[in-house]
Image (cartoon, rainbow, N blue to C red; front, side):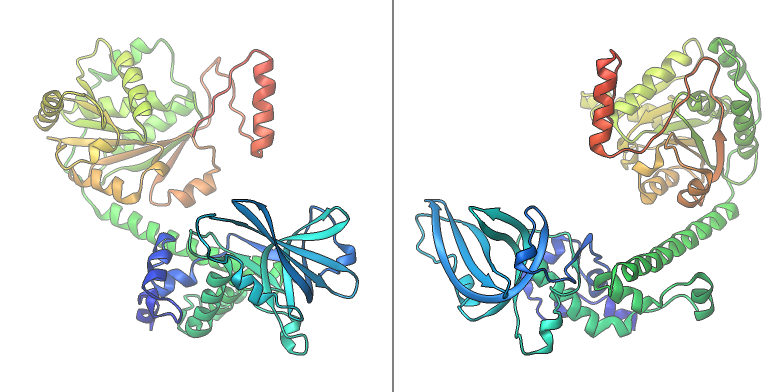
Length: 492
């Protein structure tokens, strides 16, 4: 049954080889992909406006009879098609702009001339404007209709809540909308529902097939929200099930590493810091050390604001690994962050007998130097390697790495993390993030990890305040702070 949904989208009526390639640009390869290509937003075209009520600057739909049409040349490179439509309350002019190639004689308005023959009834949708006393609509979509038929009460593109999809060049909203509607008609019956009726009823969820239809062509905005809620429930259920399976699998694994707290590196490290760990840092370090001394691999998330002291906590775990004769690695999402980690770590470990190396896509520039560094890592002469995706390369091999620290895991895929874990036998993994998310959301996003939170800032540190703003409001705040002589950073 489900195999049908996994067939190529070319089997959907109306899709030829050229359209297969265009759909591929949108990530649509199968029938399932097409059905799961959800709208980015909706247009409410359920109400048809009268020409007399059109307001300049507002989106509107009108329906009426074509009285006349003409082509106006605005320049050698731009022409305008203007169609007069009357609905009994007045005349509105539909406007279409087209670029012109003066060296080609092809009539770029031929299809519009056929569609807007005098006497034809049409829907027009677009932004209303008043120009020189005329009411105009800059047409975004249009459709012909038969005023004597039931179609006048609504079509696929008008008289309803209309879906709008992300597009690529060569694909129009109308064609994609019609294609998805056709696919829904043909294949919705194949769509599985993973939830039993009693569970749906308990959570007041739509049946899966109804949700699939309503997310694309909702009866109203409330149905669209209910459909989105059901589909989101399914996605989170699958995510949490996968994370639970991963968590169970992790707990069944055994690691070949054994740690003893020897302190010949940890004690001098703490002495050189010049400050005492906060209570939160001590608690988290104890949780991490307890994990490290178990026979099962650690998989732990370290959550804390910028400036809360995550780095020294991670370095404590790294030094415990090195004390026991193992290697460790820090994986950063960008070269800048990797270099920043390298600078911070080498400063904090100065004076300790620890070998630290930086390995990124451009570090070092000389090929021989890079090969030398890889050789030292493979021979175990480097205790701590800090790097980016370069650590994922097959040529980068560790002799006996026991600990992997990942900074901002959401910037890496699950497969990338698994690749690094496979480079050594079930290493301990510590994931760090400063992303300000509640514990419940952290447990959702990182459901395969145990969670430690540094909820206390070191003395003298200014608290971090996280706020959500629109881009306009955010840049306004930045402007205000700069006027006060302060600094602002924009991180992409």
